[in-house]
Image 1 (cartoon, rainbow, N blue to C red):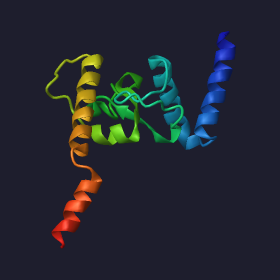
Image 2 (image 1 turned 120 degrees about the horizontal axis):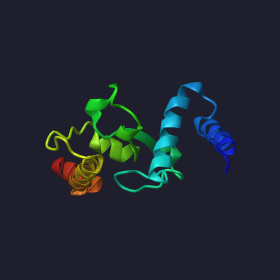
Image 3 (image 1 turned 180 degrees about the vertical axis):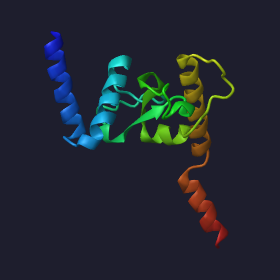
Image 4 (image 1 turned 90 degrees about the vertical axis):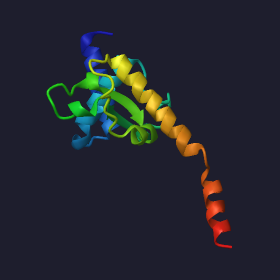
Amino acid sequence: MTDAERMIAYEALVDAWSGGHEERRAKTEQFIEVCLRDGWPVCAYCGLDLVYYDSLFNLDHLDPRLKGTPGDGVDNLVAACRDCNGLKRTLVPDALPGATRQQLLEAARTLVREKRAARTLRSRYDLLRALLEGNE
């Protein structure tokens, strides 16, 4: 594929994914850059294939302290599903000063796994049952 063909394909993908909405264009371009870097759009934390769930994708700041700073580029972004992005929230890797991107990513994955495990220790059914039994 020539550079010109690649640019045409890139623009077509941006237009298709952003739905022609100019306000979504910048985020869509960032998402595509993250996908090109990582090889395929999957959640960095749980591995969910975001191509099939594109309405669930978010761009997550690996280090939220850099959000809005000059260091806030594509290198600080990962593709994430909404659930994992919500579980990670604003994890600040204070315990990892000078950590590499890979170390930050592993720390975030561990946090998300731990939060997901804690959330699922008791199912909603169990919690509802306990509440209802308490009202008897």
